Image 1 (cartoon, rainbow, N blue to C red):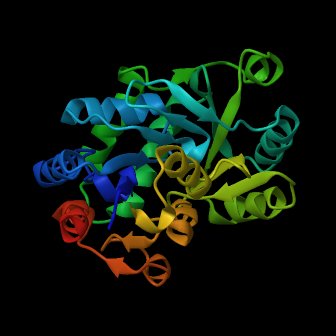
Image 2: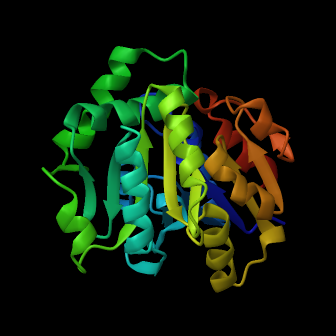
Image 3: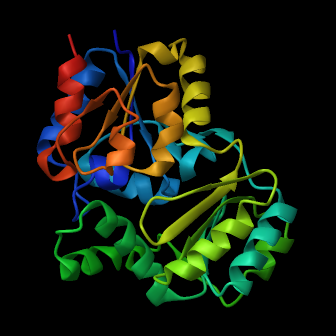
Length: 285
């Protein structure tokens, strides 16, 4: 019997226009009404995840930043796994040397040096999961990151890397030049204590080795007295693999890459077809 359901956001729970369908909302509420713990597991910051959930009227705990932070239904921080500053600086140095844009996610918020690329990076994540989507509509939605203050423009990252009040949770790197990104990834993989993943075709997500969705999910269910065997994970991308490897039931979205699907127990419908709702309803009593 499934007692906990972990759900990714982009390409999974969300449509291309960053909405949660009525079918998905209803299925989540049905699961919650039956006592099933539903937790969102996303690469997004808590602020960005909460923005979408609030618009849908959903109240769920959130594993955010690929597991770097776990938040309760009351928005309280349950656990956090930040990057060592020395590792973060080395990773940032590699990205700068390779001329790869990156954002910095911290306990104080998310920061960018380039507003245009901040819009492009979320558009890439959405387009990777929804290649047939309308680019103009996606860009319009992506601009909400800035208009709603979900990401902040700064002139330099120096203060973030050098001041103790900032805990660095994630670096999100982005480039349309695959050779640059591939070269950066190769160098980044040489760093100890750094997890390198991706949530789109043109990005890299860099966190602590302990900050992975699967590790955070295991800690979350243990605290709830639930076993991993009683847990289902739903996702579509490579940063979901650590959940798939641990959960008793792993479900890939219909829009996921074939490599992802091959590592799951089941494949549901696409994110545009409310695949999350279908996966949830299949395991409810």
